[in-house]
Image (cartoon, helix red, strand yellow):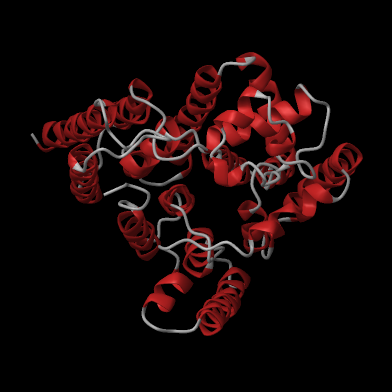
Length: 395
């Protein structure tokens, strides 16, 4: 009976998420990327149903903590949840068009997206699709993702809709892959699969938004799966691939290396040396420094911005964040030296101290917490997701 109740919860999460996608698809909804706000009704319904799905997800996790479920059924429901947003429009962000534009700069224009922004190609269909505020921003993503974007861009040709769909499908596959990897690594397999795969924020960010965070997460979990099977060299190489998709993986790598077996470092070096050489030959050194261009940006849900809203000066707010990052890094280093590479805590620390915090970033600690067997890390990951749930929803 309890298992039936659990499966019913999974179906309820799917149904609530499907309802939110229907609300986002309604005429005049401001939820689709680039949508024009004509009223709050669709946005309120969307947020209410997403919050309901998240609440049901939390209840399901509580049930699974007390009694393990059938991992196959949990994974099947996870696939349904992660694929559901594909039935609707691109949600809340035009990042997929930026990915497409950077890929086309490589594939269609034979130029460097780390030095040339989409605005330099005003007649390209990808440039017209990119959000206006980002058309003058060069790529801040890794070289491996840039080349993958070029490949997907070639498949999409000049179709913005197809390009967006390709990135969304790729991200959804990444979310399902992360679910399966979490189940393979964790001691409580069904719980870990639900922790990742039943999370509606992941579904909205990946299948709904097409964000490349899914690529980074699935590669990090694949690396952890290999290390758990003592295939350390391959694990180190995969972690470098994750870093070459998105930089936060590089910030977390030292925690994994501190007390690791030598093979992991060997894999890191064997992958990093040729990758750096090839990326530098293709893009110069700009690929390694472009991320610094985001340092002046801030978002309203970030901790420094919240402190400023309370009357703290911008300089002091950033100082508090940097101090928190330094203290947290020292604690994490000590924990790693004791044999506990608390990767999920590291991801949470990065997010709590960055001035540029977006809702899909909350997916980082979810996958890592699912395999950590650490209740505090799980609570922090879930709390951060709940906090960011309403971000970017126009009300």
